[in-house]
Image (cartoon, rainbow, N blue to C red):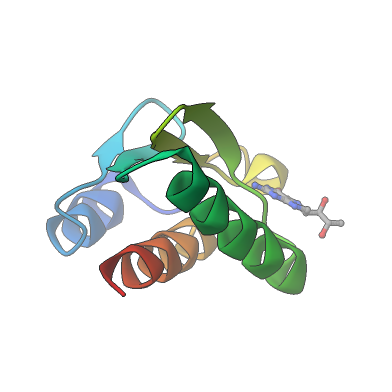
Length: 94
Ligand code: H2B
């Protein structure tokens, strides 16, 4: 999986407006009504990560979950990161 060019990252970020680039990763924080709902989201994300063998860094702060996506093998951001971002957005959106 090839690392994306900065132009390609910028273009994909336009269609993922809630995500920001932080160096070699993309990041979004999701807010829930409570901790239980946040953890249910994390479990869905974890199941998907295992299925596709692409694992986000996950920070849980009570009702907020921050996902940080990067492709370590490529030492940068790849299409896999945006695929996982899309999955997280769709899970959050219902
Ligand atoms: N997750 C992430 N975020 N980046 C990777 O490069 C990566 C991964 N590599 N999960 C996968 C596992 C790789 O180590 C295995 C062999 O598929």
